[in-house]
Image (cartoon, rainbow, N blue to C red; front, side, top):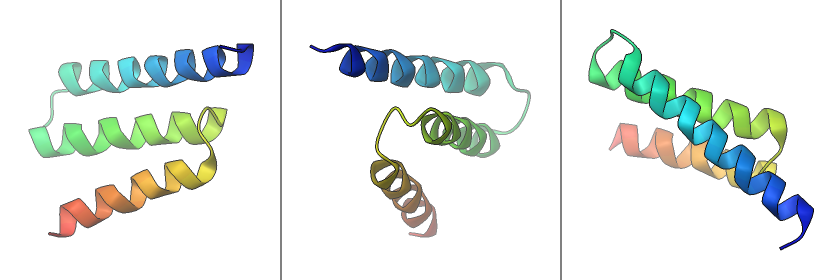
Length: 69
């Protein structure tokens, strides 16, 4: 693995850890915690560009689609 791949993997795992901590610790209903955790996870990936923006935007659209169905 090259350095860029390792860096991206670390950022994705870190963003996932932050989202999991938010989900576990916030005193809101489960749906609010899920949405907030996912929003923070996607936002961190978007800001750090650990994944290509097209992949992150697909994650957003899939989440919106799953909420509507």
